[in-house]
Length: 526
Image (cartoon, rainbow, N blue to C red):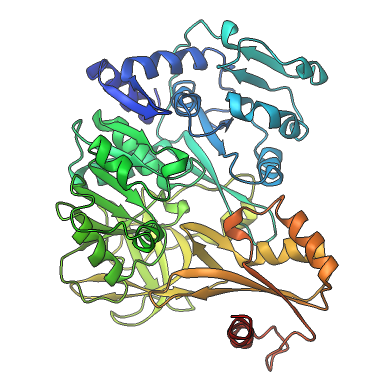
Protein backbone atom coordinates (compact mmCIF):
# COMPACT_ATOMS: atom_id res chain seq x y z
CA UNK A 1 0.00 0.00 0.00
CA UNK A 2 0.96 3.64 -0.29
CA UNK A 3 2.33 5.07 3.00
CA UNK A 4 -0.78 7.12 3.85
CA UNK A 5 -3.09 4.20 3.05
CA UNK A 6 -0.99 1.91 5.25
CA UNK A 7 -1.11 4.43 8.09
CA UNK A 8 -4.90 4.75 7.80
CA UNK A 9 -5.44 0.98 7.67
CA UNK A 10 -3.22 0.52 10.71
CA UNK A 11 -5.34 2.99 12.70
CA UNK A 12 -8.55 1.43 11.34
CA UNK A 13 -7.37 -1.95 12.59
CA UNK A 14 -6.09 -0.77 15.96
CA UNK A 15 -8.95 1.68 16.69
CA UNK A 16 -11.79 0.07 14.73
CA UNK A 17 -14.59 1.11 17.11
CA UNK A 18 -13.16 4.54 17.95
CA UNK A 19 -14.45 7.73 16.28
CA UNK A 20 -12.31 8.76 13.31
CA UNK A 21 -14.53 11.58 12.06
CA UNK A 22 -17.26 13.88 13.32
CA UNK A 23 -19.06 15.58 10.45
CA UNK A 24 -22.59 16.89 9.84
CA UNK A 25 -23.62 16.03 13.39
CA UNK A 26 -22.57 12.37 13.22
CA UNK A 27 -19.67 10.30 14.54
CA UNK A 28 -18.08 7.73 12.22
CA UNK A 29 -15.73 5.11 13.58
CA UNK A 30 -12.50 4.02 11.94
CA UNK A 31 -14.30 0.82 10.98
CA UNK A 32 -17.14 2.78 9.34
CA UNK A 33 -14.77 5.02 7.42
CA UNK A 34 -12.54 2.14 6.31
CA UNK A 35 -15.47 0.10 5.00
CA UNK A 36 -16.94 3.08 3.14
CA UNK A 37 -13.53 3.94 1.65
CA UNK A 38 -13.07 0.35 0.44
CA UNK A 39 -16.48 0.39 -1.25
CA UNK A 40 -15.57 3.62 -2.99
CA UNK A 41 -12.17 2.23 -3.98
CA UNK A 42 -14.00 -0.72 -5.55
CA UNK A 43 -15.36 1.70 -8.15
CA UNK A 44 -11.92 3.01 -9.17
CA UNK A 45 -10.31 1.56 -12.31
CA UNK A 46 -6.93 -0.02 -11.66
CA UNK A 47 -4.28 2.69 -11.57
CA UNK A 48 -2.62 2.89 -14.97
CA UNK A 49 -0.08 5.65 -14.47
CA UNK A 50 2.18 4.16 -11.81
CA UNK A 51 0.85 6.27 -8.96
CA UNK A 52 0.09 9.38 -11.02
CA UNK A 53 -3.65 8.85 -11.66
CA UNK A 54 -5.89 11.57 -10.25
CA UNK A 55 -9.37 11.58 -8.74
CA UNK A 56 -11.30 14.82 -8.39
CA UNK A 57 -13.39 15.13 -5.22
CA UNK A 58 -16.25 17.54 -5.87
CA UNK A 59 -17.85 17.73 -2.46
CA UNK A 60 -18.49 19.78 0.61
CA UNK A 61 -16.65 18.80 3.77
CA UNK A 62 -18.84 15.71 4.10
CA UNK A 63 -18.52 12.01 4.89
CA UNK A 64 -18.25 11.38 1.15
CA UNK A 65 -15.30 13.77 0.83
CA UNK A 66 -13.26 12.28 3.67
CA UNK A 67 -13.99 8.68 2.67
CA UNK A 68 -13.02 9.58 -0.90
CA UNK A 69 -9.60 10.80 0.25
CA UNK A 70 -8.96 7.48 1.99
CA UNK A 71 -10.31 5.62 -1.06
CA UNK A 72 -7.93 7.49 -3.37
CA UNK A 73 -4.93 6.31 -1.39
CA UNK A 74 -6.20 2.75 -1.07
CA UNK A 75 -6.65 2.67 -4.87
CA UNK A 76 -3.29 4.38 -5.54
CA UNK A 77 -4.77 7.64 -6.80
CA UNK A 78 -3.94 11.24 -5.95
CA UNK A 79 -6.86 13.40 -4.92
CA UNK A 80 -7.69 16.82 -6.35
CA UNK A 81 -10.06 18.68 -4.03
CA UNK A 82 -12.68 20.87 -5.70
CA UNK A 83 -14.53 22.86 -3.10
CA UNK A 84 -17.97 24.22 -4.05
CA UNK A 85 -16.95 27.34 -2.10
CA UNK A 86 -14.85 28.42 -5.08
CA UNK A 87 -16.35 29.70 -8.36
CA UNK A 88 -17.33 26.99 -10.82
CA UNK A 89 -15.05 28.60 -13.41
CA UNK A 90 -12.02 27.91 -11.25
CA UNK A 91 -13.06 24.29 -10.73
CA UNK A 92 -13.52 23.97 -14.50
CA UNK A 93 -9.98 25.25 -15.03
CA UNK A 94 -8.61 22.70 -12.56
CA UNK A 95 -10.60 19.86 -14.15
CA UNK A 96 -9.33 20.90 -17.59
CA UNK A 97 -5.74 20.70 -16.36
CA UNK A 98 -5.92 17.57 -14.21
CA UNK A 99 -8.24 15.44 -16.43
CA UNK A 100 -9.08 12.98 -13.63
CA UNK A 101 -9.84 9.32 -14.31
CA UNK A 102 -12.39 9.35 -11.46
CA UNK A 103 -14.67 12.03 -10.01
CA UNK A 104 -16.37 11.53 -6.64
CA UNK A 105 -19.39 13.78 -6.05
CA UNK A 106 -21.60 14.27 -3.00
CA UNK A 107 -25.31 15.09 -3.07
CA UNK A 108 -24.90 18.84 -2.53
CA UNK A 109 -22.62 19.21 -5.58
CA UNK A 110 -24.53 16.97 -7.97
CA UNK A 111 -26.46 19.86 -9.53
CA UNK A 112 -23.23 21.56 -10.68
CA UNK A 113 -21.56 18.39 -11.98
CA UNK A 114 -22.66 18.79 -15.64
CA UNK A 115 -20.75 22.09 -15.79
CA UNK A 116 -17.57 20.27 -14.77
CA UNK A 117 -18.12 17.35 -17.13
CA UNK A 118 -18.11 19.78 -20.06
CA UNK A 119 -14.37 20.15 -19.41
CA UNK A 120 -13.51 16.43 -19.13
CA UNK A 121 -12.17 15.07 -22.42
CA UNK A 122 -11.69 11.35 -21.87
CA UNK A 123 -14.00 8.66 -20.46
CA UNK A 124 -14.26 9.06 -16.69
CA UNK A 125 -15.78 7.06 -13.85
CA UNK A 126 -18.25 9.18 -11.87
CA UNK A 127 -18.96 7.92 -8.35
CA UNK A 128 -22.20 9.06 -6.67
CA UNK A 129 -22.00 7.20 -3.34
CA UNK A 130 -24.92 8.93 -1.63
CA UNK A 131 -27.34 8.73 -4.59
CA UNK A 132 -30.04 6.06 -4.89
CA UNK A 133 -30.47 6.74 -8.61
CA UNK A 134 -28.33 7.99 -11.45
CA UNK A 135 -29.65 11.38 -12.66
CA UNK A 136 -31.45 11.53 -16.00
CA UNK A 137 -29.00 14.08 -17.39
CA UNK A 138 -26.22 11.47 -17.21
CA UNK A 139 -27.51 10.30 -20.62
CA UNK A 140 -26.00 13.52 -22.04
CA UNK A 141 -22.54 12.17 -21.17
CA UNK A 142 -22.48 8.64 -22.64
CA UNK A 143 -18.68 8.52 -22.62
CA UNK A 144 -18.64 8.44 -18.80
CA UNK A 145 -19.55 5.59 -16.45
CA UNK A 146 -21.84 6.60 -13.57
CA UNK A 147 -21.93 4.46 -10.42
CA UNK A 148 -24.44 5.22 -7.68
CA UNK A 149 -24.85 3.74 -4.18
CA UNK A 150 -26.32 0.42 -5.34
CA UNK A 151 -23.40 -0.13 -7.73
CA UNK A 152 -20.74 0.51 -5.07
CA UNK A 153 -21.14 -2.58 -2.91
CA UNK A 154 -17.99 -4.60 -3.66
CA UNK A 155 -14.98 -3.54 -1.59
CA UNK A 156 -11.79 -2.83 -3.51
CA UNK A 157 -8.41 -4.31 -2.74
CA UNK A 158 -5.73 -1.89 -1.51
CA UNK A 159 -3.19 -1.40 -4.29
CA UNK A 160 0.55 -1.64 -3.89
CA UNK A 161 2.36 1.67 -3.98
CA UNK A 162 5.36 3.62 -2.75
CA UNK A 163 6.36 6.92 -1.24
CA UNK A 164 6.96 8.28 -4.74
CA UNK A 165 3.25 7.98 -5.62
CA UNK A 166 1.28 11.22 -5.58
CA UNK A 167 -0.93 11.77 -2.53
CA UNK A 168 -2.65 14.90 -3.86
CA UNK A 169 -2.40 17.69 -6.39
CA UNK A 170 -3.12 21.01 -4.69
CA UNK A 171 -3.91 23.96 -6.95
CA UNK A 172 -2.59 27.40 -6.05
CA UNK A 173 -2.77 30.78 -7.72
CA UNK A 174 -0.77 31.24 -10.93
CA UNK A 175 0.57 34.48 -12.41
CA UNK A 176 -0.80 33.69 -15.90
CA UNK A 177 -4.41 33.70 -14.72
CA UNK A 178 -4.61 29.91 -14.46
CA UNK A 179 -4.15 27.96 -11.21
CA UNK A 180 -1.16 25.62 -11.04
CA UNK A 181 -1.17 22.15 -9.49
CA UNK A 182 1.48 21.25 -6.91
CA UNK A 183 2.26 17.51 -6.95
CA UNK A 184 2.79 16.24 -3.39
CA UNK A 185 3.86 12.64 -2.83
CA UNK A 186 3.03 10.14 -0.12
CA UNK A 187 6.64 10.35 1.00
CA UNK A 188 6.38 14.14 1.34
CA UNK A 189 3.23 13.91 3.48
CA UNK A 190 4.41 10.93 5.54
CA UNK A 191 7.56 12.85 6.46
CA UNK A 192 5.55 15.93 7.41
CA UNK A 193 3.13 13.91 9.54
CA UNK A 194 5.96 12.17 11.40
CA UNK A 195 7.53 15.55 12.10
CA UNK A 196 4.39 17.21 13.46
CA UNK A 197 3.18 14.18 15.43
CA UNK A 198 6.55 14.14 17.16
CA UNK A 199 6.52 17.94 17.55
CA UNK A 200 3.12 18.07 19.28
CA UNK A 201 3.08 14.54 20.76
CA UNK A 202 -0.29 13.86 19.13
CA UNK A 203 -2.05 10.66 20.26
CA UNK A 204 -5.33 8.76 19.95
CA UNK A 205 -6.67 10.94 22.79
CA UNK A 206 -6.52 14.10 20.65
CA UNK A 207 -9.56 15.72 19.10
CA UNK A 208 -8.62 17.87 16.12
CA UNK A 209 -10.39 21.12 15.21
CA UNK A 210 -10.86 20.95 11.43
CA UNK A 211 -11.53 24.39 9.90
CA UNK A 212 -9.99 24.63 6.41
CA UNK A 213 -11.48 23.63 3.08
CA UNK A 214 -9.93 20.51 1.56
CA UNK A 215 -8.36 22.50 -1.29
CA UNK A 216 -6.20 24.37 1.23
CA UNK A 217 -3.12 22.48 2.37
CA UNK A 218 -3.60 23.30 6.05
CA UNK A 219 -6.32 20.62 5.85
CA UNK A 220 -3.54 18.07 5.31
CA UNK A 221 -2.17 18.79 8.79
CA UNK A 222 -5.39 17.99 10.65
CA UNK A 223 -6.52 15.13 8.47
CA UNK A 224 -3.43 12.95 8.30
CA UNK A 225 -2.13 13.80 11.76
CA UNK A 226 -5.42 12.63 13.28
CA UNK A 227 -5.69 9.45 11.24
CA UNK A 228 -2.05 8.50 11.76
CA UNK A 229 -2.43 8.33 15.57
CA UNK A 230 -6.05 7.20 15.92
CA UNK A 231 -7.33 10.65 16.87
CA UNK A 232 -10.70 12.12 15.92
CA UNK A 233 -11.16 14.78 13.26
CA UNK A 234 -13.96 17.23 14.09
CA UNK A 235 -15.20 19.02 10.98
CA UNK A 236 -16.51 22.36 12.23
CA UNK A 237 -19.96 23.10 10.73
CA UNK A 238 -19.93 25.84 8.13
CA UNK A 239 -22.10 28.13 10.25
CA UNK A 240 -19.52 27.98 13.07
CA UNK A 241 -16.27 28.10 11.07
CA UNK A 242 -15.66 31.81 11.68
CA UNK A 243 -16.54 31.67 15.38
CA UNK A 244 -15.92 28.09 16.56
CA UNK A 245 -15.47 28.75 20.28
CA UNK A 246 -18.77 27.11 21.21
CA UNK A 247 -18.03 24.08 19.06
CA UNK A 248 -14.58 23.65 20.62
CA UNK A 249 -16.04 23.88 24.12
CA UNK A 250 -18.92 21.45 23.46
CA UNK A 251 -16.62 18.77 22.10
CA UNK A 252 -13.62 19.42 24.38
CA UNK A 253 -11.28 19.68 21.39
CA UNK A 254 -7.54 19.55 22.03
CA UNK A 255 -5.65 20.34 18.79
CA UNK A 256 -6.06 23.63 16.94
CA UNK A 257 -4.84 24.46 13.41
CA UNK A 258 -5.60 27.70 11.56
CA UNK A 259 -4.27 30.79 9.88
CA UNK A 260 -3.62 33.72 12.26
CA UNK A 261 -6.53 35.60 10.68
CA UNK A 262 -8.89 33.16 12.40
CA UNK A 263 -7.73 34.50 15.76
CA UNK A 264 -8.16 38.07 14.55
CA UNK A 265 -11.81 37.32 13.71
CA UNK A 266 -12.33 35.79 17.15
CA UNK A 267 -10.86 38.94 18.67
CA UNK A 268 -13.21 41.18 16.69
CA UNK A 269 -16.17 39.25 18.08
CA UNK A 270 -14.79 39.38 21.64
CA UNK A 271 -14.23 35.62 21.75
CA UNK A 272 -10.66 35.65 23.09
CA UNK A 273 -11.75 35.75 26.70
CA UNK A 274 -9.58 34.18 29.38
CA UNK A 275 -9.81 30.37 29.25
CA UNK A 276 -12.25 30.48 26.30
CA UNK A 277 -10.24 27.68 24.66
CA UNK A 278 -8.94 25.99 27.79
CA UNK A 279 -9.33 22.45 26.33
CA UNK A 280 -6.81 23.16 23.56
CA UNK A 281 -3.35 21.75 24.35
CA UNK A 282 -1.60 22.19 20.95
CA UNK A 283 -2.01 25.20 18.63
CA UNK A 284 -0.48 25.35 15.16
CA UNK A 285 -0.67 28.58 13.15
CA UNK A 286 0.50 28.84 9.56
CA UNK A 287 -0.17 30.57 6.28
CA UNK A 288 0.52 34.25 6.96
CA UNK A 289 2.52 36.50 9.32
CA UNK A 290 1.45 36.04 12.95
CA UNK A 291 1.57 39.27 15.00
CA UNK A 292 3.15 38.70 18.41
CA UNK A 293 0.43 40.67 20.21
CA UNK A 294 -2.25 38.48 18.65
CA UNK A 295 -0.35 35.35 19.68
CA UNK A 296 -0.24 36.67 23.24
CA UNK A 297 -4.02 37.13 23.24
CA UNK A 298 -4.49 33.57 21.98
CA UNK A 299 -2.34 32.27 24.83
CA UNK A 300 -4.65 33.99 27.31
CA UNK A 301 -7.67 32.35 25.67
CA UNK A 302 -5.89 28.98 25.42
CA UNK A 303 -3.72 28.95 28.56
CA UNK A 304 -3.06 25.19 28.49
CA UNK A 305 -1.77 25.14 24.93
CA UNK A 306 1.67 25.25 23.46
CA UNK A 307 1.62 27.68 20.53
CA UNK A 308 3.76 27.32 17.42
CA UNK A 309 4.14 29.51 14.36
CA UNK A 310 4.72 27.26 11.34
CA UNK A 311 6.01 28.31 7.94
CA UNK A 312 6.02 26.65 4.56
CA UNK A 313 4.62 26.80 1.03
CA UNK A 314 2.41 24.16 -0.60
CA UNK A 315 5.48 23.11 -2.64
CA UNK A 316 7.17 21.94 0.58
CA UNK A 317 4.15 20.12 2.06
CA UNK A 318 2.29 22.42 4.44
CA UNK A 319 5.19 23.65 6.61
CA UNK A 320 8.92 23.08 7.07
CA UNK A 321 9.83 25.31 10.01
CA UNK A 322 8.40 26.00 13.45
CA UNK A 323 8.87 28.67 16.08
CA UNK A 324 7.63 27.83 19.60
CA UNK A 325 5.99 30.93 21.03
CA UNK A 326 6.62 31.59 24.71
CA UNK A 327 4.46 33.75 26.92
CA UNK A 328 5.78 37.27 27.11
CA UNK A 329 7.12 37.29 23.55
CA UNK A 330 8.21 40.73 22.39
CA UNK A 331 8.28 40.07 18.64
CA UNK A 332 6.01 42.31 16.57
CA UNK A 333 5.67 39.39 14.16
CA UNK A 334 6.62 35.86 15.22
CA UNK A 335 9.75 34.35 13.64
CA UNK A 336 9.58 31.39 11.26
CA UNK A 337 11.94 29.40 13.46
CA UNK A 338 14.00 26.33 12.61
CA UNK A 339 13.46 23.56 10.01
CA UNK A 340 12.06 20.16 10.98
CA UNK A 341 14.22 17.04 10.99
CA UNK A 342 15.34 16.15 7.48
CA UNK A 343 14.47 19.60 6.11
CA UNK A 344 16.88 22.43 5.31
CA UNK A 345 16.70 26.15 4.64
CA UNK A 346 19.24 28.54 3.18
CA UNK A 347 19.05 32.31 2.64
CA UNK A 348 20.69 33.45 -0.61
CA UNK A 349 21.54 36.64 -2.46
CA UNK A 350 20.48 37.41 -6.04
CA UNK A 351 23.25 35.14 -7.35
CA UNK A 352 22.07 32.27 -5.14
CA UNK A 353 25.05 32.53 -2.82
CA UNK A 354 24.35 31.99 0.90
CA UNK A 355 24.36 35.19 2.95
CA UNK A 356 25.62 35.65 6.49
CA UNK A 357 23.40 35.57 9.58
CA UNK A 358 21.44 38.81 9.87
CA UNK A 359 21.53 39.52 6.13
CA UNK A 360 18.31 39.41 4.13
CA UNK A 361 17.93 37.27 1.03
CA UNK A 362 15.63 34.82 -0.72
CA UNK A 363 14.68 31.74 1.29
CA UNK A 364 15.29 28.37 -0.37
CA UNK A 365 13.96 25.09 1.06
CA UNK A 366 15.36 21.60 0.66
CA UNK A 367 14.66 18.16 2.09
CA UNK A 368 12.25 15.27 1.93
CA UNK A 369 9.13 17.46 2.08
CA UNK A 370 9.97 19.37 -1.12
CA UNK A 371 7.52 18.28 -3.81
CA UNK A 372 8.15 17.01 -7.33
CA UNK A 373 6.91 20.22 -8.94
CA UNK A 374 3.87 21.32 -10.93
CA UNK A 375 1.35 19.12 -12.74
CA UNK A 376 2.11 19.16 -16.49
CA UNK A 377 4.14 22.37 -16.11
CA UNK A 378 7.82 21.42 -16.57
CA UNK A 379 8.59 25.05 -17.39
CA UNK A 380 7.38 26.27 -14.00
CA UNK A 381 8.99 23.32 -12.25
CA UNK A 382 12.38 24.09 -13.79
CA UNK A 383 12.05 27.76 -12.82
CA UNK A 384 11.13 27.19 -9.17
CA UNK A 385 12.94 23.95 -8.29
CA UNK A 386 16.68 24.08 -8.79
CA UNK A 387 19.60 21.67 -8.50
CA UNK A 388 22.38 23.12 -6.37
CA UNK A 389 24.75 22.09 -3.59
CA UNK A 390 25.54 24.43 -0.71
CA UNK A 391 28.47 23.92 1.67
CA UNK A 392 27.46 22.10 4.85
CA UNK A 393 23.98 21.20 3.56
CA UNK A 394 22.95 17.79 2.26
CA UNK A 395 20.08 18.72 -0.08
CA UNK A 396 20.80 18.91 -3.78
CA UNK A 397 17.35 20.07 -4.89
CA UNK A 398 15.80 23.30 -3.64
CA UNK A 399 12.53 25.18 -3.92
CA UNK A 400 12.80 28.93 -4.42
CA UNK A 401 10.09 30.36 -2.18
CA UNK A 402 10.20 33.98 -3.34
CA UNK A 403 10.09 34.91 0.36
CA UNK A 404 12.68 37.20 1.88
CA UNK A 405 14.17 36.15 5.21
CA UNK A 406 17.22 36.39 7.40
CA UNK A 407 18.67 33.97 9.90
CA UNK A 408 19.18 35.12 13.47
CA UNK A 409 21.30 33.03 15.81
CA UNK A 410 19.31 31.47 18.64
CA UNK A 411 15.98 32.26 16.98
CA UNK A 412 16.09 30.94 13.46
CA UNK A 413 14.53 32.41 10.37
CA UNK A 414 12.86 35.83 10.41
CA UNK A 415 10.32 36.69 7.69
CA UNK A 416 11.13 39.87 5.74
CA UNK A 417 8.41 39.98 3.08
CA UNK A 418 8.03 38.86 -0.52
CA UNK A 419 10.57 39.09 -3.31
CA UNK A 420 7.79 38.68 -5.89
CA UNK A 421 4.21 39.95 -6.28
CA UNK A 422 2.86 36.82 -4.65
CA UNK A 423 1.06 37.30 -1.34
CA UNK A 424 -0.86 35.29 1.21
CA UNK A 425 -4.35 36.37 2.21
CA UNK A 426 -6.38 34.40 4.75
CA UNK A 427 -3.72 31.71 4.37
CA UNK A 428 -4.21 31.31 0.62
CA UNK A 429 -1.28 32.06 -1.63
CA UNK A 430 -2.28 34.49 -4.36
CA UNK A 431 -0.49 35.79 -7.43
CA UNK A 432 -1.56 39.39 -7.89
CA UNK A 433 -0.79 38.86 -11.56
CA UNK A 434 -3.58 36.28 -11.80
CA UNK A 435 -6.09 38.80 -10.47
CA UNK A 436 -4.77 41.47 -12.84
CA UNK A 437 -5.06 39.08 -15.80
CA UNK A 438 -8.68 38.31 -14.90
CA UNK A 439 -9.65 41.97 -14.46
CA UNK A 440 -7.85 42.86 -17.68
CA UNK A 441 -9.83 40.21 -19.57
CA UNK A 442 -13.25 41.30 -18.33
CA UNK A 443 -12.62 45.06 -18.36
CA UNK A 444 -11.03 45.01 -21.81
CA UNK A 445 -8.49 47.50 -20.47
CA UNK A 446 -4.73 47.24 -20.83
CA UNK A 447 -3.59 49.14 -17.74
CA UNK A 448 -4.68 47.16 -14.69
CA UNK A 449 -2.90 46.96 -11.33
CA UNK A 450 -3.76 45.22 -8.07
CA UNK A 451 -2.10 46.04 -4.75
CA UNK A 452 -2.31 44.47 -1.32
CA UNK A 453 -2.87 46.58 1.79
CA UNK A 454 -1.14 45.33 4.92
CA UNK A 455 -1.81 45.68 8.64
CA UNK A 456 0.73 46.57 11.31
CA UNK A 457 1.65 42.91 11.75
CA UNK A 458 2.38 42.40 8.07
CA UNK A 459 -0.90 40.58 7.40
CA UNK A 460 -2.83 41.35 4.20
CA UNK A 461 -6.00 43.26 5.08
CA UNK A 462 -7.52 43.64 1.62
CA UNK A 463 -6.81 44.15 -2.08
CA UNK A 464 -7.39 47.25 -4.20
CA UNK A 465 -7.48 47.37 -8.00
CA UNK A 466 -6.74 50.32 -10.29
CA UNK A 467 -7.92 50.33 -13.90
CA UNK A 468 -7.23 53.10 -16.36
CA UNK A 469 -10.38 54.60 -17.91
CA UNK A 470 -12.92 52.20 -16.38
CA UNK A 471 -16.57 53.24 -16.66
CA UNK A 472 -19.15 52.37 -14.00
CA UNK A 473 -21.05 50.05 -16.37
CA UNK A 474 -17.83 48.28 -17.33
CA UNK A 475 -16.98 47.88 -13.65
CA UNK A 476 -20.32 46.19 -12.93
CA UNK A 477 -19.81 43.74 -15.80
CA UNK A 478 -16.20 43.08 -14.80
CA UNK A 479 -17.12 42.42 -11.17
CA UNK A 480 -19.88 39.99 -12.15
CA UNK A 481 -17.72 38.04 -14.61
CA UNK A 482 -14.62 38.02 -12.39
CA UNK A 483 -16.64 36.63 -9.48
CA UNK A 484 -17.34 33.56 -11.61
CA UNK A 485 -13.66 32.60 -11.71
CA UNK A 486 -12.02 34.29 -8.71
CA UNK A 487 -12.66 33.08 -5.15
CA UNK A 488 -13.92 35.70 -2.72
CA UNK A 489 -10.50 36.10 -1.10
CA UNK A 490 -9.03 37.06 -4.50
CA UNK A 491 -11.64 39.71 -5.32
CA UNK A 492 -10.41 43.26 -4.63
CA UNK A 493 -12.39 45.09 -1.97
CA UNK A 494 -12.00 48.34 -3.90
CA UNK A 495 -11.83 48.88 -7.67
CA UNK A 496 -10.82 52.40 -8.67
CA UNK A 497 -10.89 53.99 -12.10
CA UNK A 498 -7.79 56.07 -12.71
CA UNK A 499 -7.12 58.63 -15.46
CA UNK A 500 -3.49 57.61 -15.98
CA UNK A 501 -1.56 54.78 -14.39
CA UNK A 502 1.46 56.12 -12.43
CA UNK A 503 4.77 54.91 -13.86
CA UNK A 504 8.25 54.88 -12.35
CA UNK A 505 11.48 56.00 -14.03
CA UNK A 506 11.76 52.63 -15.77
CA UNK A 507 8.31 53.01 -17.32
CA UNK A 508 6.82 50.34 -15.09
CA UNK A 509 3.70 50.68 -12.96
CA UNK A 510 4.56 52.49 -9.74
CA UNK A 511 2.89 50.26 -7.16
CA UNK A 512 4.18 52.37 -4.26
CA UNK A 513 2.40 55.42 -5.68
CA UNK A 514 -0.78 53.37 -6.10
CA UNK A 515 -0.56 52.58 -2.40
CA UNK A 516 -0.51 56.29 -1.62
CA UNK A 517 -3.42 56.93 -4.01
CA UNK A 518 -5.35 54.13 -2.33
CA UNK A 519 -4.80 55.70 1.08
CA UNK A 520 -6.04 59.09 -0.12
CA UNK A 521 -9.14 57.67 -1.81
CA UNK A 522 -10.07 55.52 1.17
CA UNK A 523 -9.84 58.60 3.43
CA UNK A 524 -12.03 60.62 1.08
CA UNK A 525 -14.61 57.85 0.97
CA UNK A 526 -14.67 57.26 4.73
